Length: 55
Image (cartoon, rainbow, N blue to C red; front, side, top):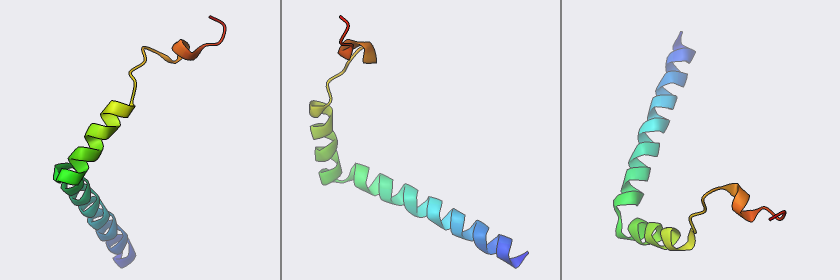
């Protein structure tokens, strides 16, 4: 029983840290600038068939 409680608490701790770090990075100025750069680099394609070599 103690082992299950230990594993459960580790999983909860992992999720809390993961969410906190993700929110911290996304709300920081560096995270926002990286997100803006990624939006510029990504070219929106309608589908994967746009790269089809048969056309």
